[in-house]
Image 1 (tube, helix red, strand yellow):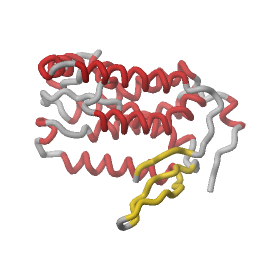
Image 2 (image 1 turned 120 degrees about the vertical axis):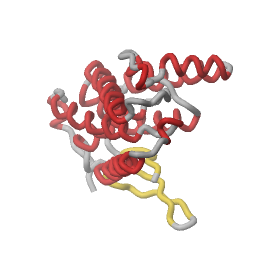
Image 3 (image 1 turned 180 degrees about the horizontal axis):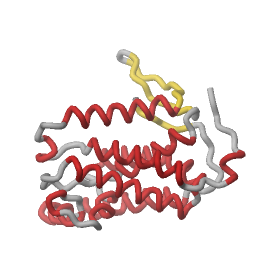
Length: 222
């Protein structure tokens, strides 16, 4: 299932969400211009490497990506869900929220991969936090989703709580299934970073102030 758009309107312009997307795209274009040796050095310097932990890497790593599809997938999810969370938190608080989710995702990844020498990069953990916040605040918003039906593709409107919790369950069990295997020592998906980011987003959105304007707005339901 591939989400295409949500039905929940936002009432402010998503300056921070767009700025984050621009920063990620700019960083990727810089990576793209490097030769293989320079790229490896760049990723090793600014990616998150558990055995050589440096606190700043928890921030720099969430603005780097390993390929076009990695970048496009992450930025697409951020665009779908990020504007509404920015809207209810406000621009400054949303930026803090996004960075804290990225840091929390990195911490969880470190906990499960203490001996890994592989650089971890990508905004997935921070974006997972945005998704966790979305499922709390807009559970009944409908997500227009591309769904395969046998050999055909069709679109369906699916409640946000269903598609986001389904995504979370996949991440969790994929992470559990990866335990005891060595694929992360050779490169792979940081499943538990996604789990940590999603859960941190739920916690943070519950403790952060969302403003009175959010309480008065309609939520689009089935």
